[in-house]
Length: 82
Length: 236
Image (cartoon, rainbow over all chains, first blue to last red; front, side, top):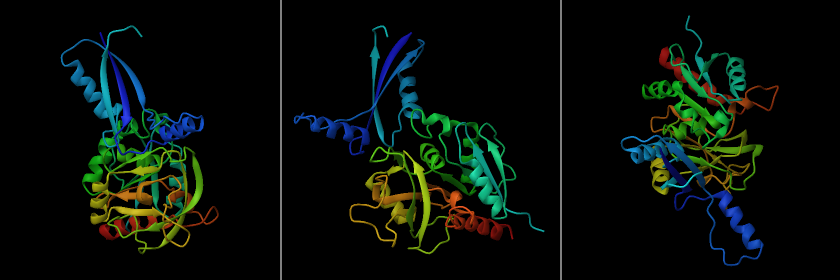
C-alpha cells in the first residue's frame, strides 16, 4: 500500500475569499509581516500497490479532487503512519 | 394537435429546487417531469433543467460529484445534438464542473451566503433561453454561497466575442457600478453564461422562483417561454 498527500490550492490570480479574510484578520491581530495567506485543501489517499500508482493518483486529481480551471495541486508520497 | 413542450428536471441527491421548476413550467402550460440522476434515458424530453440545491452536500467542490452522475453523460450527448440545457445555481455549478460551460464558481467574496432579489442586465448573446432585448433589466432572486464566477481574461474575451455572456449583475437602472455590481464578487459582474451554440445556459439567479404572479413576480418567465417558443417553432 502507498500513501499520498495531496495539497490543492487556487491557481495564481484566482481570488481566494477565505485566504483574504484570514490575511486581514492576521493583520488586524498585529502581524504586520503577513504578506499573503492562501487557504487550500489537504487530502490523504491510501492506494493499493499497482502499476503507475502515481499516474493514477494524478488522474484522480485532474478528474475529481481538483478543478484545473481554478486550482493546482501538489502530490507528496508519504511514508509515515497516519 | 402538437403536444406541449416537455421539460425534464434532473434530481440529484441534494437537489432542492426541482419542485419549483416543475411548478413554474407547468404553470406556464408546459409538460414537465422529474428525471432521477441515475437514469440514462432522456427520450421524450425537449429541454433539460439541472435545478438548484446542494448536490452531494457540495463536497469536494460544488457540482464536482454530480457531474459524474449517470444522467450527465446523456445530458452532454443531448446538448451536443443541440438539445437545450439549463443549469440554475447548483445546476450552473454542475455544468461548469462538467466543462459544458466555461469558468468556475468560487465562494462569495464576502464569505456570506446571499439570499436576495437582485437586478440583472440582459446582454446581447447567442443564448436560446433568452429573447429579451439587450439592456433589459429583470429582478430575480439569488440564493447561494458559491456564485462568485471566475474565468481567465482570455476566456472572457472569447465569450464576449461569441456572445456567451448572457446576464450581468447591475444597479436597478441597468448600469454597472464602477467597483462592480455583483453582490458575490463575480468577475466582470457575470451572472449567467451560455456555450457558443447558445443551447446550454447556466445562471446563478433562480428564474423559476419568479414565474408565479401570486408569488414574487414574473420576471423569470421569459427564460422558459423563449426556449419553449423556439422548440415549438422548430417542431412546427
